[in-house]
Length: 392
Image 1 (cartoon, rainbow, N blue to C red):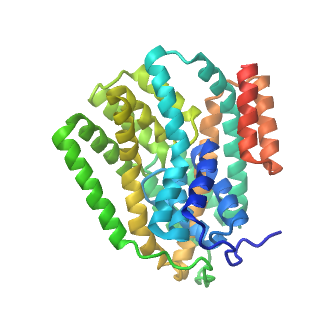
Image 2: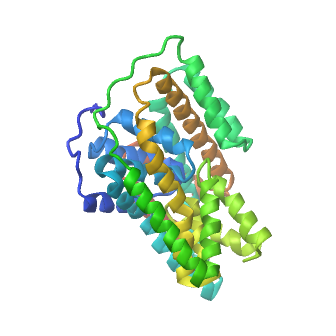
């Protein structure tokens, strides 16, 4: 078995390689946080862009701050590999396939209001997504749950996530339990082979200034787009717990407060958001398109992802400096256990939304077996889509 902690064989991948690698990963990014083990396989196991411990730290960080966890991990890996520019191209590369597909589907929906082929495919693809998330839970659980105490933390977190408790409080509790239960004496932490994260203060300030300038221009020349972008940015800043935490808030603001569309139309956008790869908050593209056309789709998409990206590149270097603290390592272990609990909860949530019959069960079983035996996720998703188009 290969050791993921060995020195990176490709410590400085090109920006083009980062973009293409994460774009390819983005094509298959179904299941939200379930993609984390597959990202790990690509970044740690195959390309050695960072070591296993640095990746685990990144998962804990990305779960603890707002935004879609898997999107944040793409940026985190790019940040460690090539600094802020690497973070930016990885982030954009990962979300671009979902944005392009959602834009095309929104264009079609606005003109037909019926997508029977998409709905048919999605019916079967739901079963594949359940298998994908279940396999991710098993895979990540193997690396994070080392004792019955870890399992207990994961189960407590799963129960609280199922009860829709505040994700921030769940993460804090998991960190506390990790420090409390994982031994009285703090364990020494192995040194990372990935190196420290590069200085981000100046690039962060430039990003913030550029963002403020763009929002100022929108305020003076396109106030509707300004309000759309500002709303999506506010939702992103409150998205602790990933995309699933954003959707109820988006529904409240878009449908109930501003009445930009009715509930049925918004729910159709959620369906398309689940059908497309990437985080479910890509539904923002659908909302933006129906409200203000193509420019609205672009502004809404940037708004729903930009704040959490800025938070990541601002916080990551400080987070990285805490790696040597043994108590911090125990807290990280607790947070990673809570992530397993989140994956378990998402598996159940997705499973309850499937109308199970023998065809769905057979498709889910075949997909799970293929993923368990390490078949590339891209082929599993493509095969599942093809079977769904024919059988459902």
